[in-house]
Length: 86
Image 1 (cartoon, rainbow, N blue to C red):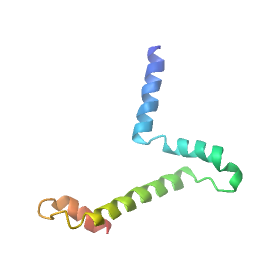
Image 2: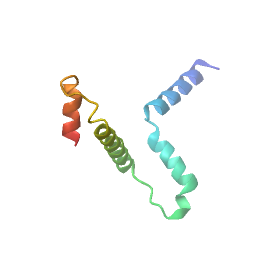
Image 3: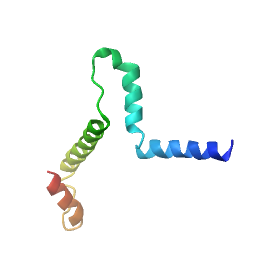
Image 4: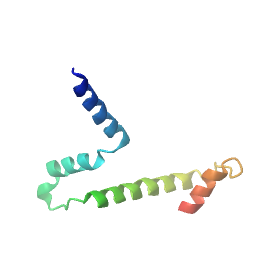
């Protein structure tokens, strides 16, 4: 494998790990499975907004489940973040 090919492969893996290619993967999935269903393709902006909401709402729900286990004096910064999001 040439160095440029190796760097390209590393870049693709890094984008996948960090989620930077999430919209491209969503777009490919949509084209393959939903294009003919009448399901509207989200814009890049709408997709990332929806992903952020999904991630943060899921985090808030998880935190609420752990509410009794977190001792606020031990984790004041974490507890403060939970109160702000709730």
